[in-house]
Length: 493
Image (cartoon, rainbow, N blue to C red; front, side):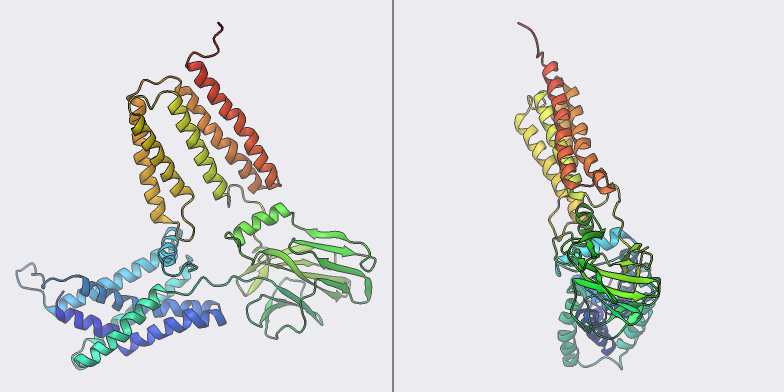
């Protein structure tokens, strides 16, 4: 790129409109999103990013590529202005393509989150096709660029340098040090006001209110008027009381003014553990737990509302039926939004990874016992370590930055190690390869109990662990039996 291209790219980044977008991006990501999370602040960052990313990419490209203007097909050199124009168009196109990939595909969102995690460990990137509404802002970025590169608009050298010294670090910081993932909603307090139940979500003074037994909700702008209560009695019926028992997801009922208590509603501790894998996979305190209760009298009975943290609200209607209402952002509560208590095969990544690694260990032992190491013991051991390490990297990658790059590297190591193992086995005299059947049986013995636990049977996690251990024993024993038989064992003297 020529000096002229760098000047125009720097002028684009330092244009007042771009500087304003950088300021908006910084203030919105690090302040406004925390104060007013929602659609407006979310889309505002997207629009500002469409104005900041293209000039930053164009400037980086002109600084990185040091070469004279390339000759055109007819032999004439490309004009400096044309080179800068092409770089700008490429930067705009790249910004749009990457943004569309991140916002429309889970793979793109995951890769972006892993990259941003290098700068902001708690950064969150979510695939949301509605964010594509910000793409027309790329047209505005092109308009800003055209205005910035006009000779009459170009400032003097000193002014350009001053703008660039301000714009470049600010733009890099605004784009890379994005705000941490938004704090998810969590029902932490409930109150009853006249004929209204109010749920406060623990983020600012506002809450959600319902006057029709939870069928619809609207914004409530008054701050809480009382402290959270773990016990609440029915007005006019002092002997009927309800209480919560944190950290459990449980509501207890008393019909004798608190002398004795029985369970009125609960989610089993094992299902609560499953929910907390979804809500707080890295052991956060913001989990699913019953923390507050309130009672509202009604014409034909009474309503009970319970704040259940990340799990939303448990609501008892006048007929005595309990409803589990999940949070849909900060704007709604509904039964449809409640997180499923049973989802076969989901949220058991750690156990699945353990099943793969254990099965691979059994496979390596079976191959070694069959003689796969004889031709090249060192090669067999090295290939085994590479395969095991690659699989570990794939299924149990480093927390915080685990994602697509580590998955690819782990897969390459697994493939390379597997080729080495196959070569060692082929070129060695092996006996008893039938014993490798123990490897898939071991995987099934570990995986299936935990898959069943995720689906609700068994309900208790400890039972799933016990089943996995017990089922592994015959799988390994079968492999040992086949290996011994193949080597001429069990012969009588």
